[in-house]
Length: 267
Image 1 (cartoon, rainbow, N blue to C red):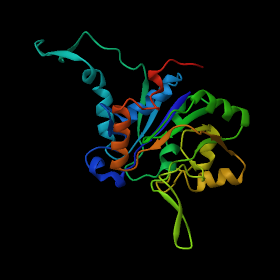
Image 2 (image 1 turned 120 degrees about the vertical axis):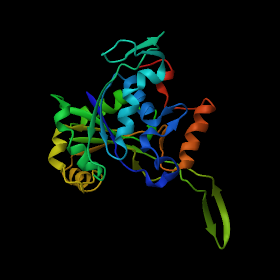
Image 3 (image 1 turned 90 degrees about the horizontal axis):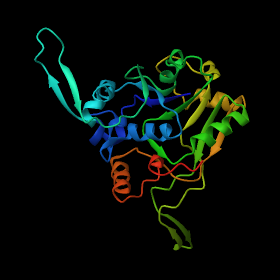
Image 4 (image 1 turned 120 degrees about the horizontal axis):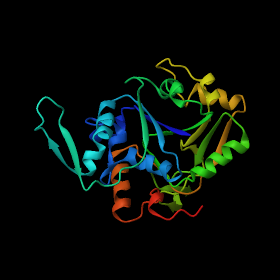
């Protein structure tokens, strides 16, 4: 199976970072958040990726084209007259064994249009994973896919309960009766991390205005074809510069729950 990652948005709510780079290339530690997302899937054996590119997509292409050189010391030999320079890696480090397909899906296109454009790159696969280029989780991909197959629906989303960005107070007769600092909200939202059957393309349109989260998901819901996998552990969406700082603080403190590839697999 392949994992499709939406990498084309402009990330306008974190202009400090995305004015100069696409949102998936914002770094958590020394690596882009996109790399962290791919490592989550690779931990569960999903190592084929389709990246839906848009805004500054050439920077994502360039990063992976140079990935081996960025990870290693190397020598460039220009001495052979009339031939291309030869690159020799010095004591090469192990590189992630991934297969990545880069698809330009339009700078202004919405999410549904981007997904609609990648069908031909799925090969014979009946199902595929789909996620955003800005969300991290300690989700068990095996369990997510098992749930999807058990329910037999066209699509499965991951349902999460995020923390409030604000403290919540209860007031009676003008007095504060209780105060909770950024509690877990009772409401459930979509955390992305989808599994889709290729029948999903019947609900999508290549028109640039097609928003995956609007008509396609609404119609799937009305047809009884959208299942929800409940994930109660760690989930975090990087939407602002403050979120970037939070994720980096977590990483630097040694508390990065999404980095499941750093612990022994216990499945």
